[in-house]
Image 1 (cartoon, rainbow, N blue to C red):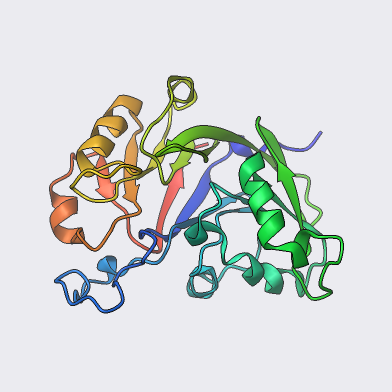
Image 2: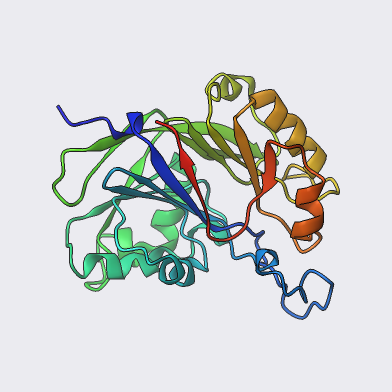
Length: 269
């Protein structure tokens, strides 16, 4: 039987922590967009999880190539998609270099609606008349826990739990791996999902800005959700240019922090 790597410590790198425009925003001269604090520069949200030798990517946004180069990513064993919005999928084609030295297909996992959008928008990758130079990815509709295996021949594997969330009226996925959960683009967490968020070491949670928004948690809402979930540490992501890192982080409870691009945290097994 393969080793279940979800029982071992993992390293999580937040590749991007910004909202759909990124920060700085094009053409804006607000104090955050002009900030010289590198934590106020936010690329679009994406996350990389290392468990033993396995590398799991969550979302491929428009900044994925830049993020992968910045963090020196060399290995991806699977991609999990949260939903089909542009800022979470459009970097899909930038997976191609991960096949230059390893031609094994790379599985991508998504809810059925997101998978349908990916198949339609990327016909040259997923269609019958596939472009020869396209990334060799396979797409899997998932609605229950699944297991990711190595593309490189090792025996390790990791169990991933998709978590049903709501981004306004749109059902989206968060993901749980071991004692880590990643919940981006969320304004409502169903009760059944709360039951899957117990005993977390690290929670990454959407917190758009101090003001309310119809499809994202505000800071106050995110703090309330984080305290209800009760992870040892919570990190906020998907912030707009309304949020100055130093000021916002200082205002949060001791066990809640504002994330920033490139933040790496270790998670207990």
